[in-house]
Image 1 (tube, rainbow, N blue to C red):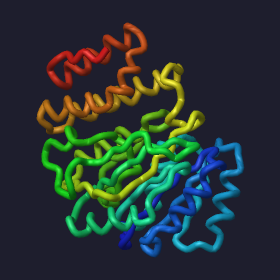
Image 2: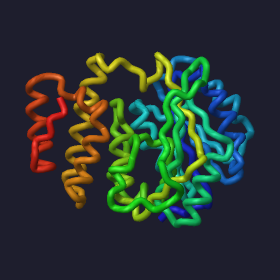
Image 3: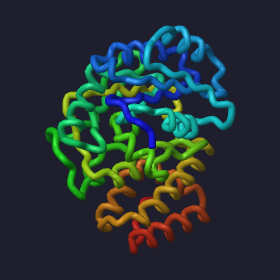
Image 4: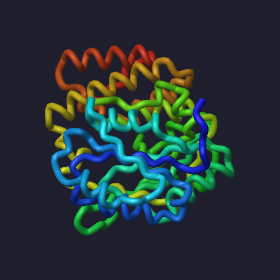
Length: 292
């Protein structure tokens, strides 16, 4: 049994992020909660730019900081799964190396998670333009802090991992709360299973994480690419397998499927995959939802 310390272990996977990683690190070390934060940077072995050197120089002599360099495997999902085992605080957070957040982001999430004894605390997301930092989308809940009831999946905006913190004990003790490896959309299965396992989930207004979108970012890979479509098929299949086992009302299972459909519909690559997914949805929901 691991010994937990109060605070948040923040996992930051790093891959070819030299243009933005310093701004991300500055935001992390400027957090009002920094004495209670543990920073776990994990360098992807296939990173080819100067990200690794930037991280090492920026965190030199900093306390509560770990740099991991796994020799096997790669991808955000693999790296995050490795880093989870090193987390020593009682909550885990995730930050992409090209993003940043309000200086009180983690303190607000942690304080309210403690007050409410919540397994997951959800903040707000600002989707920002790379050059102008103009906000062109905002994901926040239309109500203040409260426990989300059984219809939680109907409330979720995105299954993104970095706008939330998660109780470490819950994550480590449930092996299904892990990331898909080697594919895009890797965080969907993590978030869906974490929310399902949680006893209490709260929302925290006024706490903003800025998600940067730019042409070369992983999340901006063309939906027309073969990788995007194949990865969508793999992850969507995993999600269907997972929710089939969940003891949820059909309405909530349907909400999960509809929530991921903006990208999952690209999994319908050809007739064979379309037939397979149609059959699986019927098995999971007992009905045929036509998302084509």
